[in-house]
Image 1 (spheres, rainbow, N blue to C red):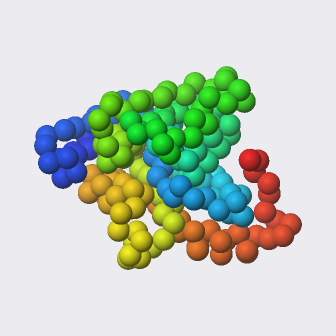
Image 2 (image 1 turned 135 degrees about the vertical axis):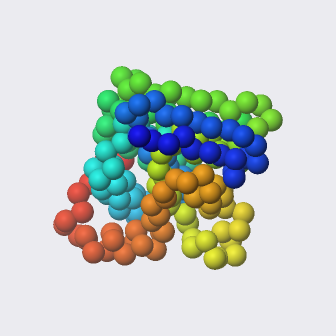
Length: 190
């Protein structure tokens, strides 16, 4: 039985989310700067994790970069799963990949965060709808530039809420990509 996730440690208030029986959703958070040369390596990592975890749904954040790559890739490859996109109130970094004609046959639930909510609120909503997470930060957490990273914020909040988080740093993906070049890395589509 899946225990309810207490977000008290995250929100500072009593708040519980109880999953429906049989559901297991994989959430995703990551850098807004997915390097073009690492798109295939990132998709290979997502594919490996999806095949290992076998989730019934995928939850992403609706922004550019990793959010869009994971959301669109999973919707195209595993179209029968539950797909949820949590869109922040601040639309400046949103990539509306779910509106593409190639995805018109996929059932995608779009959750629009209310006016006045923050990216932190959006990140918490991703966590609330997930059972485990994938995280692809641009840099290690100790890097000075990671201090204000929304990806690291989401990872820390997910860990506080008791979710497992599987990480792939950009340098690790680059190393994996080099191991599989040139002919053994399949083109997993755009």
